[in-house]
Image 1: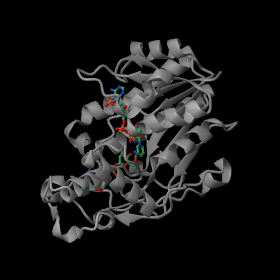
Image 2 (image 1 turned 135 degrees about the vertical axis):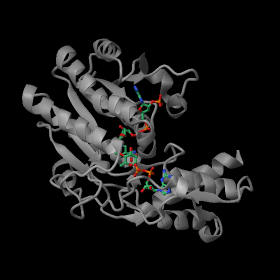
Image 3 (image 1 turned 60 degrees about the horizontal axis):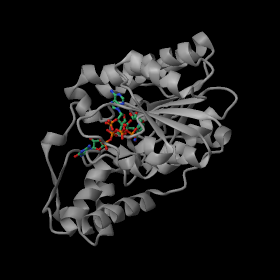
Length: 319
Ligand code: NAP
Ligand code: F7E
């Protein structure tokens, strides 16, 4: 039986990836950090089928211990300080976890299990102030936040370990992907959660920042399949994963409110507090390489995604 170590298993993507790999028959180990209150809600339903090991991306010995204990054939590094807005308030921590943390785990793999295949959660945020549209694997990087430049450092570390040590390490340059399990502070989930609260009379308005920013939004359940496919290839490589469609934050809000029979213009207010020091205005991915080499296709459309998220949040508040 193949064994796998997932960092960030308690996060959105970690939970979907764990479900996918359970279906594929993997023995699953997840690295989790110690918190005063455990945060296992996204993996509660599979807890009996997986093994959790305590560890933190800022602590080399705990990473090495997790690798020794799991003896993985595949390692998925999904852990990160992943919220872009927070990265301006905690730039050093973001660099430590999201950037250096990747080097720590690459070092661990190199010493403990050099034959393990490695996946790095790279990000479209590395394109930042884009110099061409759509963005592909050859598009120039121009990160616009401490999160973006930490991810860029990790991205190049992954390539360098491939070239220096012959490691099977691949970068998935994933564009925004969402789901009903998305963290509540990200804009899509912030909107669908507010729609549900407003619908049930628990809130009167929704305050947002830049409504003009455009993102290529896909469904997380589709995107974890691309991660797995990358590690099934003979050769390691880097791939853009995206839908090829882009929408503004305003368009997302309009559709989400409409799904609950509400007019977004009556409830959405703009608030300078949510405007970022530097913005990524437009992301649109060209995933033709992933289509061609991995045979990967997104299945859930933008409209289906919005509907799914609104319905799940409405249900949650009904309960
Ligand atoms: P997420 O929901 O924020 O999950 C992040 C995970 O990292 C959580 O399990 C978190 O643990 C863990 N973590 C944070 N700091 C840690 C530390 N110091 N040591 C160990 N674990 C730590 O993120 P996601 O949306 O699933 O994204 C997964 C990965 O893909 C991230 O690296 C993200 O940056 C990247 N990415 C995401 C997107 C997207 O649109 N979702 C796009 C491109 C790339 P706790 O539960 O304890 O907080
Ligand atoms: O912002 C705008 C905001 O926080 C999207 C992470 O998963 O994807 C994610 O990063 C856009 C930005 O995601 C609000 O200014 C307006 O333009 O949902 P977000 P993100 O920054 O794109 C990338 C690919 C990752 O790798 C990251 O880990 O929405 N926006 N008003 C707002 N954003 C938030 N959060 N809150 C607002 O009120």
